[in-house]
Structure formats: C-alpha cells, structure tokens
Length: 371
Image (tube, rainbow, N blue to C red):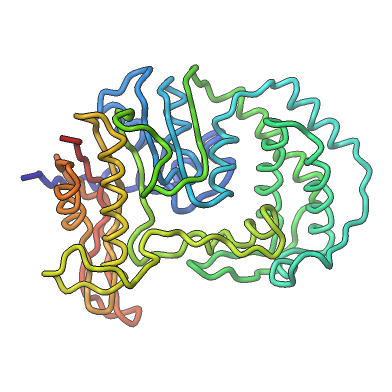
C-alpha cells in the first residue's frame, strides 16, 4: 500500500511559473508545463546519473529534456503537437554560436518584400495588425533559406516574437482579441533572437543524447527495457484542450488553414470502462482507458526497477470530483507498476455553475516503480 504525503510547498514547482525567469527554458511560454525544479527534484530522488535514459512521453516544451541535458543525462521526448516538438528540439540542440550570430546579422540586412495576406485564413489574420503580419510572413519565408539547426532556432524565435506582438489573449480554452499597441516587429524579433543567443551562453549543459520527436504515448518508438526513469505530466482529465489553445500558432507556422491537432488522451468517449464498478462520467472512462494504455507502454519500455514520476490533476465534473491520485495507482497496478508514494502538491475547489463548491481537487506527483 502506498503512502500519501502532503507537499504543498512544492505546489508552484508543478507549474511553468519558475521557468519564466530561466534562460532557454523561457524561450516559449507553455502554460501547461511544469518547472525545471521538479525535474531536478526527481532526478535526485531517483538517484539518476550520467548515462541513464530518461523519458517524457508528453514532453510539452521540453523542460524534462533540457534539465536532463544540464546534468548530462540521456533523454527522449515525444508530443503530438508539432509546435511543442519544435520548441523542445530547439531548446536542447547544440549550436555554433558564431553561426547563429552571423544568421541574425544576415536577417537584419534583409530588405522587406511585400507579402500576400490573403493566403492567411481570416480567423488567423484578425489576431494581428496588418503591418505585424506582413513582417511575420516575410521572415517566415526568409528563414526557410537557412540550414538546421540555425533555421529552427530562428523559427522558434519568430513564433515567440509573433505571439508577443499579436492581439491574442488566451483566456482558458478561448482565444480572445485584445487590441493593443505592439512594438515594431522587425526590431522586436531581432531583440528576441539576441536574447536567445545570450541565453545559450548563460545556461551550461553537458554532453548527452537527446532525442525528441512527434509521437503517441500509447505507442512509443522506443525499444523494450531501455528506460531508467520517466518524468512526465499528461494532459489533465477534463481540462483545457491544450492543442486548441495553440491553434493560431499551429495554423500560421505549421500549415495555413490547418486546424490544430487534438490531443488523443481521452478523445474516444465510446470506450469500455476500465473501472466498470465505479460510476464515472464517459469522458473519465475514455481518459482512463487511454491512460491505462500509456502505463502499459511505460511498463514495456522501462527497465525493471525503473522509477516513474507523473504530475497529474483530478477532474472536475457536475456530479463531483474524479480523483486521479486514487485511480491512477489502481491502473498502475493493473499495468505491472507499483505505486510507492503520492505527493499532494496543490488543492483547489471543484465548482458547479462557477460558484457552488462540490468537492476538493488535488494536483499530485505520483511515484511508481516497474516491478
């Protein structure tokens, strides 16, 4: 039987907030991510060393992988969102700093060429001033002439600068327009790139293997018994569809008119319940079915004795709270994993009709071992 420990002092570490002041980690703001510090805490807890292999099957913006690179620990990362994969790859690449400096100078010398805004869908155009969007499209085309990894470095900087110079206001799952004065884009973009270049000099990393790619956590492109530890945070039950939140960036930079990918965890509500004796909402049944597949896949790729740390949150429904810190350990047991400890990191109220409190939700760190 596992122990449950309250660690509300670690609550902030389960958020992206501490990363906002960290060089390289803050290159792309990813609200759904966790902090570098929680990765370092788990590396210490799991007694990981250089040469070990760490996996994050929901890598988001690459916090696990970058923290591992700081310590010279090999890592693998997968995500369904191309934007996340790009951000994670760019943060963990090795660069020739002089080559980056020359590329930034070359961009600065370019003479502007008029762009056709008509090829951008109206639901994307409305989030930018015409002048900003002209500049964004101009640089987007010019960046294509550079070779990797320089091209990807310039591209992530462009996405970050465009987001900050847009009229986008992300209110939960809704993207609203908030018209405001924005800086002259060319100057702002070049300033972002120079800051990124400075960040690379500030953050020390160590030689190791880092592989990040598009991938489904239920079917990983990794061999059996190769992973020493997993540090991850899957999409939370009944929370914001995070791929929708980044739909503007996906459409503008990864395919004009292309809708953002939907995350697959819990997307099929017609599944057979994994806990038929518990009356759960259909969305919870679908989510748990997929999470069982994820845990079974982690069992396959992990070595015997491998440690698994999962940051996860409860689900809030009109009928009450679905407690993932209770159900995930049961799924783990079915999947060949032992739960050692559950750390309660945060507590908040589940409300009905916005004001009626119907239960307390917890955000937890669940530590498991492959038996």
